[in-house]
Amino acid sequence: VHAAEFAAAREAMERGVGITLGLPAKPSSGGFFGAVASSGPRRMPAWLTLEPSLSAVSWASLEQRQGRPAEEGQLSVSEILGVRNTGMVLEMSVRGYPQPFTMEFETAEERGRWTRFLELAVQLLVPDSERAEHEAERASHRQREMEERRSLNEERRKRLSEGLG
Image 1 (cartoon, rainbow, N blue to C red):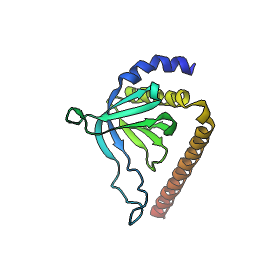
Image 2: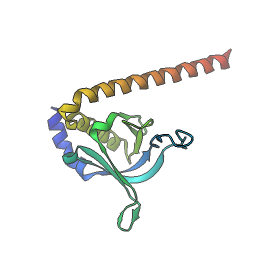
Image 3: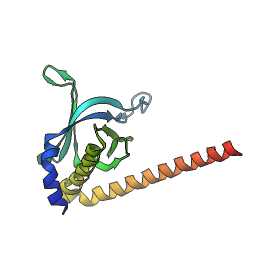
Image 4: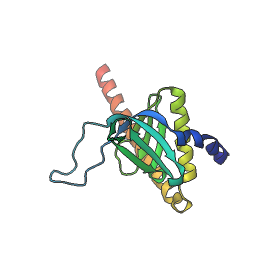
């Protein structure tokens, strides 16, 4: 069932879509003062595509320099730990990044389609040899996210009860 759904979506994924991409800061590897705090994700208009032959999601900024995208990147689907539609943006959690990549689409329908496209790509394009390790990483990532949300909710409840008391 998933393979047929993926085959039907493949052309649209390879054609791509215009988005506003939020690139998270990659954690620094030390330096004199250790990890450098960033002011949040960099946002840019970009073109997002799937390259099934490479099992990769690619993006390229719409800004051009000398006839080429000013910035471009590629992520192996094996690096994608989670895809979530928040109702405002699509968040893609990626191995090695503390914050998710964010993608803003023109319409809610497009955001929903691409959420499903990326979920299917992860399910079907991660090599069998990496599948068990990938699933374990995804489960660990989901557990960390749940713990973070639980902690935030507890803090909110505490602030709310202090404000009422």
